[in-house]
Image (cartoon, rainbow, N blue to C red; front, side, top):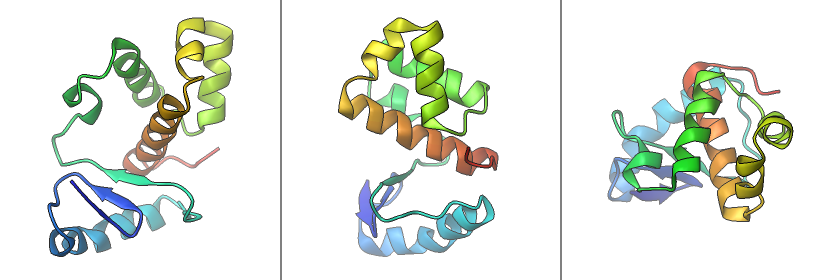
Length: 119
């Protein structure tokens, strides 16, 4: 994994490999209408990587990831509100800033990969 210009490339081990993937990532972001502010991170997983499961994250991570993906969630705020109303365990889990950042990153990834419009 290598970070270049605020983007984490899962399939890159150095700047050269990251630069080789950069144009494709920027084009996908532009097509999805995603305009980064420079204050967030963008994670580009490898083609067949499931980073949430690969990292052996706790079960709520995997459950939330599947819910976000399967339900085409395009806004982390919408997801958090859903959790507050329907899944208190996830809502409590999302109170951890690291968990929330990870969820926000996966929502952005879902928006990009599924071509959704951000809410």
